[in-house]
Length: 143
Image 1 (cartoon, helix red, strand yellow):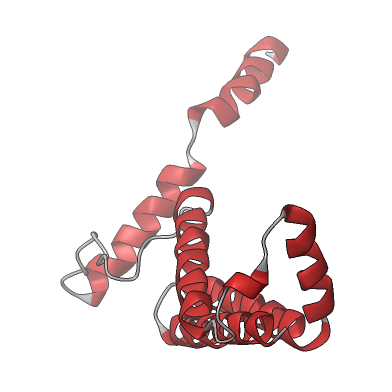
Image 2 (tube, rainbow, N blue to C red):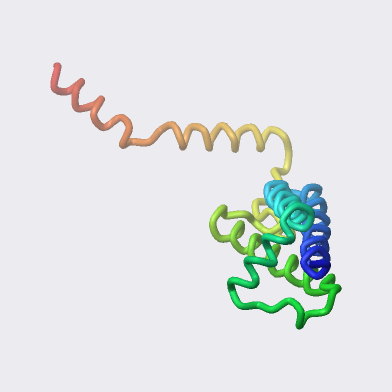
């Protein structure tokens, strides 16, 4: 049973630390929260459910007596693989831009250009011809 506890404790520590780092990195706060929650789940398994995990491993056919009593390195590697899988999930499913990629739009030269660019974007988004197609037809039909 100490092997299960050290495995999940090491995984929890690594996941929680990676989550804390991602919470302070720009544009990856959600990923940090998810990693911290996975770390908390690993802590809960290490504290409350080691006997259930032993039964689960026995049902699958994994004999833990062949493993050493200290699985800290294996737990850390498991946590790193799990965090990499969650990171890939966030990149693919939630269109998360990696924190190391910079913003591709150049900053405006001065404040006046920035305001006119924002106003132009709002006008372009609001002046969709498909929105007013039926309005023109009704006005022509009534007259």
